[in-house]
Image (cartoon, rainbow, N blue to C red):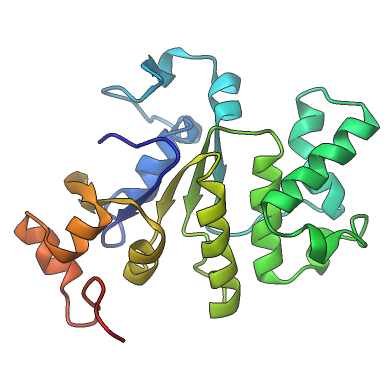
Length: 232
């Protein structure tokens, strides 16, 4: 599976098929699982990430989890956390980087007057965008999103999807989603998985309109799914 730069790639399939597990290998989160092992290769710019320094991998490949996990700190401190861990102590540089990350996450205008309030004062959708900003602050090349809208209402979901369109101008985005309509709306490419297997990978239009594999057809054309570009 080739994940194209500056595009959104969606990973779809039933629960338990390995989508999130695969996503976690892309920045070596799998190594936090006891007794895990690795076969094969994951290449970024032709370099195997399993032979790279772990910190270097995670600088280049950031991850935002399904459950929003703000730290018990201010909004500013949440977004600046990775920068401080990386050794940045210059206050002006921190301020500029935090503002840039919040702007990239489409959150600056909503929080600029309350940066030193608790991150838990934000709404669910704002917290998720703040978690995205925290990831963006260290300027990763690749952004991994694991079900970023699963707990959000339709308005907050629309904001996250709009944000994803903006992010791919500068970054490569890999998205795990159970929402077929979301995959159709935001993804350029889609991979369909069944337990432990990549069944089909192609442009999103092909996957949802003319899949080559019967297993893919059976999944995307389930009665509760709406075919690609169908009128609603």
